[in-house]
Length: 345
Image 1 (cartoon, helix red, strand yellow):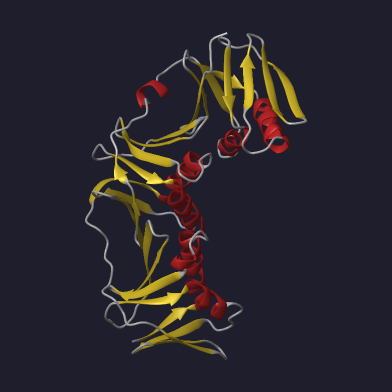
Image 2 (tube, rainbow, N blue to C red):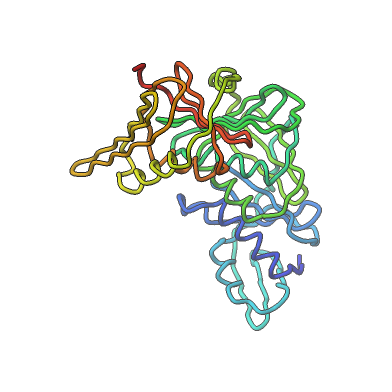
């Protein structure tokens, strides 16, 4: 098999592969070449797998592994407008302007195909990326993101130790579903879509243990499980009178995150006409006070680092509503932060 790949396009797809593979497992440093209506490049982090059609090519059998680091290294500083890629026996040959790279590879295995799936709806790629970025920003390794439907809209819910990030995307969902995916792979999806940059229609689909994202140039499947847990969506999204939240609130949270270690919490207390901030760790103590009339008193404890991450992905104008059991902070674009109230004052 011999084909020609535009150098800039090849570099672009390898950057996407780099975001998918990540850096947590060196054993997943390979990408894979195969044929399906053209040359397909596959990358995986062990849970998330992405298939990308990168150019036309002659058909060939199976799936051929090649080191991602080798491809990136060879293309570094490449001046030619296209790369010649050949697969012959147990060799992959790359030819550029003045350089040639030959790699002996293992015998190809049968091509991995996407697992069976059922389409459940469609959305806009950039919108999906932005909402998934927000909903997973406050998570850490071991946390899960729940993607599902609510009132025919797409919902993303990410509970962490002290806050819940929630998005409601006003897109048409054809079928009710709820699916959970791991934090690491959800962040890899966000990073890969940011590199992709182009906006397009994104089809959402689910299988028994896979959530799929499909568009014209690529398809992704991420492992997870069907889940009926709606995490009190109805309660979190209930209508109630809200009030504008002063921007100084986010400023104090950001300052606390800068001054305090990552594993500490910030206590925030509302007492009618003031909001008090208090955080301490060892010899460090941070206090702040914000003049602001409130609907009712409250007390919460929250990770300032996680809350800062969520705030940074919301629009500048936010609103706050104080319920009996939680405080809800939201913007005008369907992004919500839910923080459980510690106790009544």
